[in-house]
Image (cartoon, rainbow, N blue to C red; front, side, top):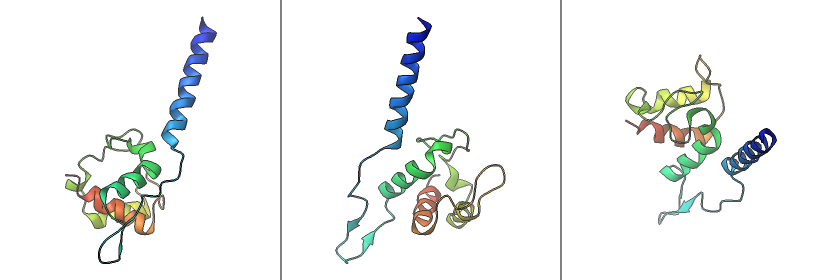
Length: 115
């Protein structure tokens, strides 16, 4: 009985882990606007980046886990402050450089709107 339960638990964990990691190529990450520019700062792009880089600590629902709850982070920090934390880290566990460049700007804009 214990062996079957352990096998079931291990199998479920493996399936959930693989599902959380995603897998497949996503060709819809950027869309062309009429002006000819690429829109990389929309909410779905930010959500995708967050899911890949941040959700393991902050939770897929932004409610925290190992990292703090981010559901209302925009009422505590400005976009510039969030961007600084993303680039330089923060004492207490947030490492520097997990997200950089346009991805960091996209996430900072998205999180700053969470109030």
